[in-house]
Image (cartoon, rainbow, N blue to C red; front, side):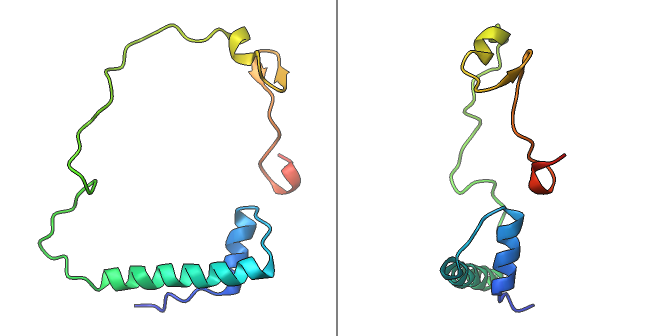
Length: 103
């Protein structure tokens, strides 16, 4: 099994992908914490789970949602009433794709 060690470069790369600005102290702390998490996962991978049935949830649960019943929707004017910016019948939001917020 590969070594689960995580480097500061890994943390910086993940932070860049998440658009987070981390201080050197935060990079040190997160490198240590993520290394501990990966070490724990590696320890879990050592467990013998032969014959253990997979479970979708730790507790025995069933669908607790109500039946889907059609209902009238919110009028466009009411939906846009508190919008900070709008463009006709649409919410106007800042661009988020690409470097620097461009498209």
